[in-house]
Each structure stands twice: as C-alpha cells, then as structure tokens.
Length: 122
Image 1 (cartoon, rainbow, N blue to C red):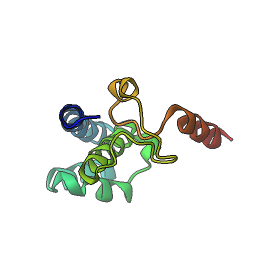
Image 2 (cartoon, one colour):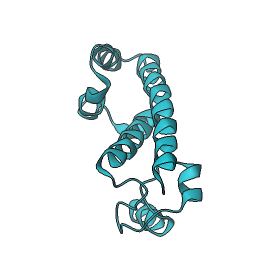
Image 3 (cartoon, rainbow, N blue to C red):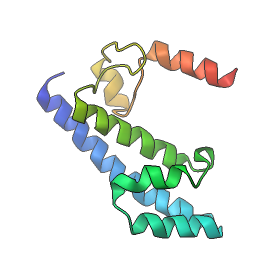
Image 4 (tube, rainbow, N blue to C red):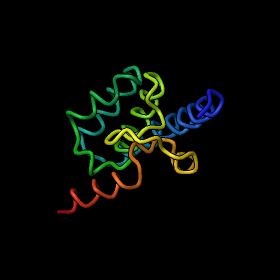
C-alpha cells in the first residue's frame, strides 16, 4: 500500500469517526437513563481522544453498537499513526486492499476474523 492509499483510508476513517461520535452521543441521549445522559454530557465536554476511556468504564459496549464501531475506528487510525495499518493484528499478514476497501477499520485477515468469531461463539 502506498502513502496516497493510506491517506485515502485515513480520510475515510476520520469522516466516519466524526459521524459515529455524533451517533453514539445520540444513542446515549436516546437511552433515557440518568447515567447515559450524564455520560453524554461528560463526552460533550471532553476531547474526542478521551471518549473511549471515559465511556468504557461506564457502559456495556454490547448495549451500544456505535461504541464498538468508535473503538474500531480509533484503533485503525492509531495503526496508521504507528505504521501498522493494513496488517492483521493477530498474524501480521498484509491485508488485501479490496478487503480494506470494504471496511478500512478491519483489524484482522479473513482467517483470523473467522477464528475470533468461532472463539466468541463457543
């Protein structure tokens, strides 16, 4: 993958991240629980870089699908920053461009993704 392709993926990730942050805040507000409303206020008054740490200790990620996506997007952008983007986080195989084009936040190759899925469901 060349620098221009990485830049394109980074741009797509950032655009989606902005959207997912907004959707996640709305999820929290729509939940109509006191603690989720308080968390939404905390996040609105925090830097985006603090969101994962603040929210992870307060919610069950399974109840808020947008939070899971938020973590995936943040992780992919972090991988770009450290030069590991485009490699499977488990086996370090280079991910194919068409695979990343479907979802640039993808962290695993298809084989490792399937292993993870089987492990979670067992």
